[in-house]
Length: 428
Image 1 (tube, helix red, strand yellow):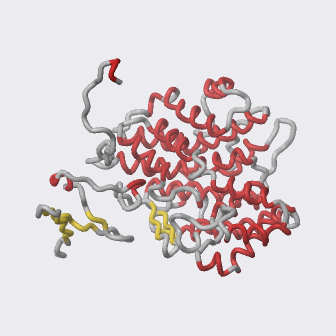
Image 2: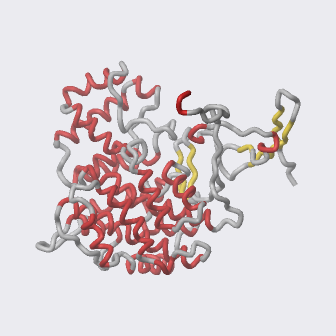
Image 3: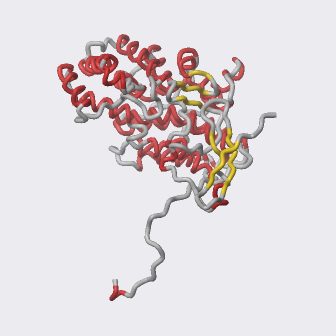
């Protein structure tokens, strides 16, 4: 039996604490600091950059090597060979489904895509120009008011049915948010369509015309969903786990994740990349803009990644998809897309960007693809939320299945006033 490795902390007053060093199946070792409070001290780690907040078996990232695995499967293989609902099954259950399991899972999800009719009327309470993400936060959170039969978080069957409802209904709610914003009638889901076909149908179909899904565009959006399904302990996932640690119901927890994702530093990167392209305006300005980036005059959006210090493994898949979509829609000569490709070519060949590993990331390409698909900019983060719902619910479900999970309670480094007495009014 391998001997337990120990890290020893020695304070300047001579007190010591031995802390176990834990190893995962992949990734760096971690020091178990749970007994640190015995010395009367805590660690200080703003934004938790050096802290493992939980154990998980779902997703692994190696930013230096440019790796992303779902349950051990490389993201590139899943994006090429799998479907989104198969990936959903994998994230939830830990293994890829058999043919029978896949058929049953798809049927269950399909049967839950409709929303309660009273929930549909809930939309009229929002202003017509409400941002779709604001609507998503409110409506997804309101699901708990409609589905009382699945709110017992200690019951695995309740957690299972809640997961099915969220995977199935969030795309319907997202499409309804778009239709409400544009003033178009809601399009109810059709069971004859696949998951992604159904979403595009609900987004773009009208009662006046027959809708025929384009398989190239369907596959493009399917890849976007797969690539964004989970991403380890990011801000929104950590929020879902923290909310869930209090015992909150899963609908409230996913709504908290959507609210966090709405932040421009998290879910708005592809929108920011498109805004940058529109700011550049013309291919002739690319050299000037690139030089401005080098001179710290401009910020290059959609390039580099805080986690990936190498090529984002999702970006290569999205790049291929981007070119497929532009070719299918005959948009290769579109001004915005020509500009994007010119900027990509410059960044991939300029030593300044290569040395700093500022490669185009998944957000750069996904923004271009979403624009080409006709999805409006204010729906970009909503698409992200639709894809990430499975990651959030899988992470929440994993945490709820642990026997010893506790409510999250970070500590702080207090730097405010020391104790002082309340002064009389005339002495303030």
